[in-house]
Image (cartoon, rainbow, N blue to C red; front, side):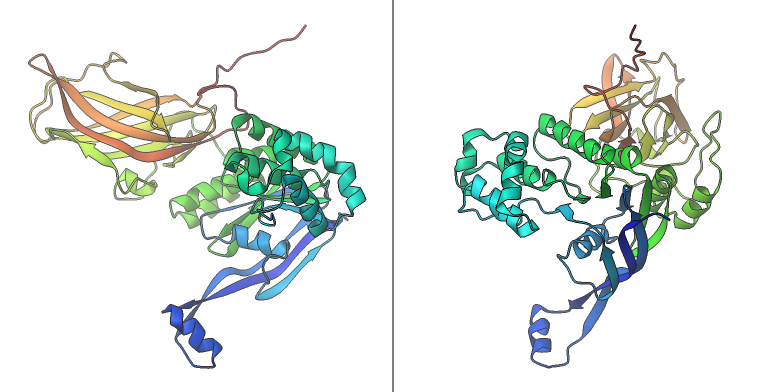
Length: 424
């Protein structure tokens, strides 16, 4: 039987919600006030075995960070028990125990002591910590003089280099610049190869799929399911568009990949099954209007999440209010900084569209391979054209929704060259 590193048994955390700030004070004075209980966690149970990497995923407010804080002793539970067998290092709120008046070096010893190390043990790890942080002579300066980048580098270096038996990580791997992030991920992989126990919370589904042996899915404070990363990520994708029951059925079924995607939507508009931008920017003359759109994965399911290396589909529906000659239908993908990464239109693809009349509706489908790196992107839709030799924008929807690309292998830049490598 496997040794248990962490046991979470019927864990609950209840917060009292007051109508007014003064109600909290009144209650402490023994007065009766109206109060509502909110379950951040409700009877959650799971085990983490020694040497295992377990991920926790879920929508915002599902209790992911709360459960880690209870395991690490930052919060007390309202009910249930947590058993931990092994020394923990937690990457939760980096630098939370730092004294801003102390130097970086003094904070290294302060944090090490708080974790439970003797001065001799910290001395033995000091070179590794300073090398990892790589902040030079600033280590002798007060932390209050550090840039935010230097601060998180040192905090991460202290937490990651004490060689714990159990590592707990909450969205802390993407700190600092890209080079430091790469160093953090290498250290994370080293921990995994050394057989350390890792409990990992992240919204980065690519990292969850790549590193985890098993995944626990939380939803509104309740454990919805646990199992293989791929099945749980698929279930989570359904949760994002409020398709819980359909998600459960899909997670239990054997995955079958369709030859060609078939649009799946349960009534209403396609976009109702997506997480869309509530502040979408639109403009145009409105002779034609983009009235609906969809992003579909390789199995034809409407979703904001697409796996890198798979075929996916973009669809848009355009209604014509007036006569429009030779309309052009387009989409564009941008990164979160607003840089246009890629896109195409029916003119580039040499797809000619006849003259459209009032009342006509056209559905346009773009099918392609997802070769963008893992990350977040924004998609825009448009219908344009030329009239009397002049370019006209009939309708554009800017940043209509996001696309999350899940990847277990990223290369340099925006997209993957899909190189085939041989070494002789």
